[in-house]
Image 1 (cartoon, rainbow, N blue to C red):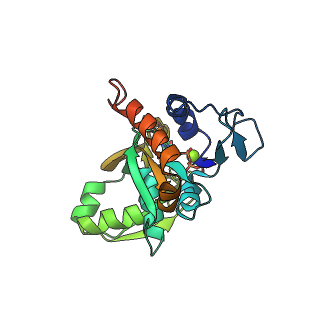
Image 2 (image 1 turned 90 degrees about the horizontal axis):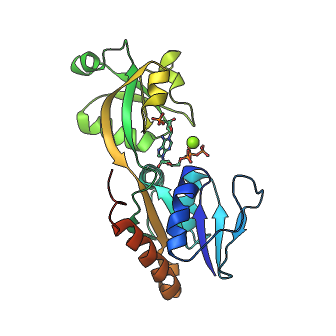
Image 3 (image 1 turned 180 degrees about the vertical axis):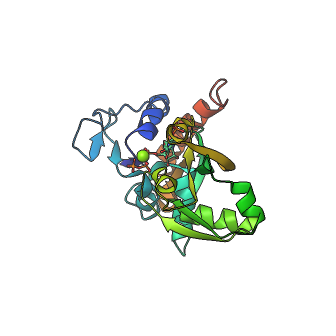
Length: 224
Ligand code: PRT
Ligand code: MG
């Protein structure tokens, strides 16, 4: 049995064509089904539906053999754990669920001036490890405020001067009168594989990795 951990929403949707290339079709729709273990057309392949932030945990500890997770989630997972991402093999950048992680502030906040002045910034984010590393590398002093969602709200109500969050179209920032002032890094989703599973189930896991890899390498799949 090969067990693949996926999150609902954009990662699941963008993974469907990759699974199809490996001859795998998920038999239930995770958006409507209440099942957390989904069967596929292949009797020896199943899909677990987990929270996006839990995918690395399931794969690292062998609850799933492989999974698909954003680089943001993977970096943050590594930062949370003393052991980092030990036991996780990362064979492929799947080039799906692309976005960037950025610093944003209220349109009326002079970020550049605050940084030049050496001001201590209050930064709200779900990405505490990424934010800490980024501001430390710039030599900017920050107080980090951990949030679990709707980061865009924090500067609007005075909870924070800035946020560190994912941006794709920029519509959410615009809708909330925020502006992007730094791009920290580009983000896409990665295939992650449990290293022990890779040894024990080498052939079936390899064939899935190769099928995904062929899609990623195909013309028209790797562009922005
Ligand atoms: O939603 P839930 O709390 O269950 O978990 P999650 O938010 O971690 O999962 P999900 O499915 O929303 O995102 C999973 C992964 O998709 C993330 O870890 C990223 O790697 C990737 N991804 C790609 C994104 C986006 N693009 C994205 N735009 N994840 C979230 N967003 C959000 C962003 O946080 C912001 O609120 O969309 C909003 C901005 O979008 P634009 O288009 O308005 O800029
Ligand atoms: Mg979300």
